[in-house]
Length: 507
Image 1: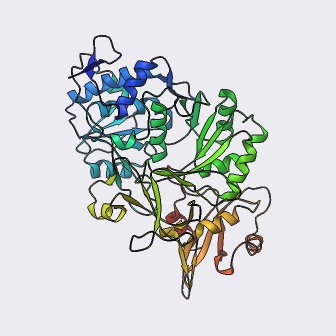
Image 2: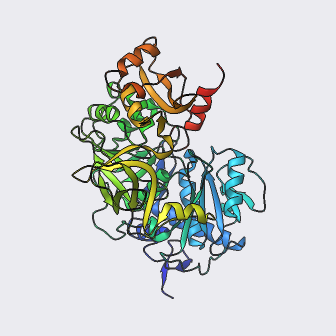
């Protein structure tokens, strides 16, 4: 077996294939050992050499604990522990096991469900917070690091076809599902030995994405493959985020739409220098046109890009540089292919709405222990996104709504995305979630929960009057309530089940 130095004196490991997650790490640690791969605003930093050495040491500990090929190992970490999460993730991969990333914000019951469902062998945590008990062992990252003495010997040979992770969906429309991804899927599109790496226009890219989200996993791959190092904001507030951009002259920034809206409403561009940003990427949900337009003004030198994918479909995605001539477009396929089909699965002509599908050239993902759901979503190479949309004449994708969110009111179908986008144009609306409410005659009516900007007294009647110029009568919310903040999941998406419960509860 070919052997390569691990970066630790006296230690050697089996050389992994380039198309594995830890294979990317080994290549960077050899080429740029002293370069900072990940840092946080709390002062933590991790070079590629240190990442490689600490992951290798931890992998040997996992093997001594009996972790074997294909075993699932939970990784429960918070934003402040991104470097230690990255070490744990690559250690699990080096041991031939499967990483199960989970945010430390997940309640104990949700964590217990995930660990039970995936049949976890162990759980590594970033702090001393109590974790739910079960048939798995639990250990803190520091506790495991103290066990790292000794020669690691040979680590298992891992290939692109081997499983790398089980990532659980956000659960906005039901119980979270575990999505399996092989190493080849996660590393697809990377160029391990390229002279010119992605994000070459900046030395750091900034994000504040939780461990356990698809956006977070994308940032992990960026840290391994991009020229820029990852800078993690360990607690997102608009001022703190903008201050980091100014202080570190950040060139690339990644957000979800909710973060983008908060940055705009806080008017951070009037208080901080954001001119260093060349790329502002939004992911996890469609970026409302009014928000995208405002971002181009707040970040004067940035290209604003909207990315569209899902935990199931990655790495397939569409990407769209914001174009005021196509404000609702999500772009064309940047990786893989996009299709809109009818119920029979055949492609529909331009302009006709139907089921949105993405397809990747990488190893396809699948649901873990859910064959029925897998059959409904993963179809002969295509992944059904659960969204209704259409392609225009030029092949750009436009979303109508989440399939489960479309409101059927009488003879009409109402797009909640369209209602939300129109309402966000009102100066008093900072955020909004639109849902369908039970109606004795129409079946469903339109309801909305609104977070106001606080600049003036909010009048629901005035909002309805504002919307009459932009929407049809059946699209205007009949019930509007104001709340302090929208309930959201770890990925920043509104939890519409919680919003619906709020709107249907007795006054």
